[in-house]
Image (cartoon, rainbow over all chains, first blue to last red; front, top):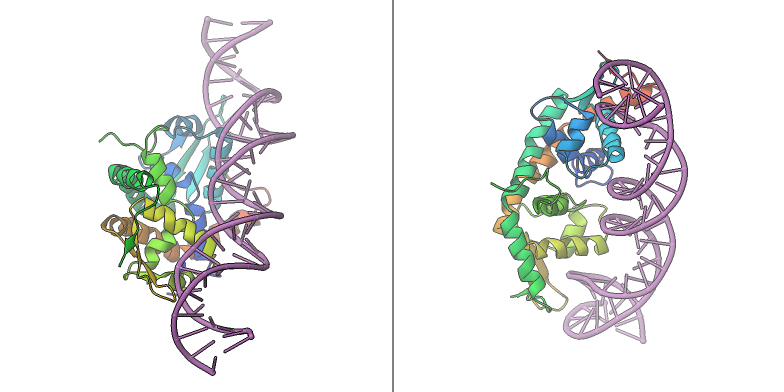
Amino acid sequence: MGYNVMSVTCPSRLVLHRIGARWTVFVVNALEDGPLRFTALVARIQGVTPKVLTETLRSMEEDGLLTRVDYGEQPPHVEYGLTDLGRSLLVPLRAVREWAESHVPEILEARERAGADPQPTRQRA
Amino acid sequence: MGYNVMSVTCPSRLVLHRIGARWTVFVVNALEDGPLRFTALVARIQGVTPKVLTETLRSMEEDGLLTRVDYGEQPPHVEYGLTDLGRSLLVPLRAVREWAESHVPEILEARERAGADPQPTRQRA
DNA sequence: GCCTCCGGTTACGTTGAAGTACCTGGTTAC
DNA sequence: GTAACCAGGTACTTCAACGTAACCGGAGGC
């Protein structure tokens, strides 16, 4: 009890804002099968730039969603893996990902229908 | 099969982008118990401005997530309600909301720990 | 006469997240 | 000697999303 995202002042807003950040969903889903190195993440999450990925990873580390393990080797070897907290977040975020992947046709159809109407036919009761 | 959010060109990216938009989570969750009027939405989702809410609602309508029913009365009477598609999205998005609300303490603690370290103690293996 | 109600719209300003392009350091392999 | 590897860092720019403030129209009530 006590936390409610509908309230402006509720700290859950901060949390929601972070997990709603552009690349969080991707990182969490990319790490579902275990830790990955930086380059592996860049390769897996197509379209993410090193800069943005670094920022995302730092934020998530700060929030305790993942751990950064530096093996101190040369060339560098660093692995990112989900914490227990991060793994618990994987559950809802995987569902979101799956929803997105499985409802593409419906959305695209709806968009086309809407776009086809110059004067959108909205419902009148 | 075929849709994969990790691919840059995959249309599921568009979908994910839309449902990841700032206020979509709020709107979907606000409408879980049935249709609401515009002002009711503004009141329920604290902090959202009319302008942004309108934009969000229009986008969601375009994507077939909700319906806008205008009763053509004076003063205006308009109701927004989830479609079947929107209701199916409610499932993962409610989970996200609940995750946010139930993990506030962990996140805040983690953030404090991270912020407390001027020189962040990252793991070294 | 004017205020309230509802569901917005419009013009404008701000900002923060994201993208682009280029750079670094130490080690091994050619 | 130089090229690749890995994990980034820096400087700069851009842009869409978000916020602010004011305004609208028509019906009904005081």
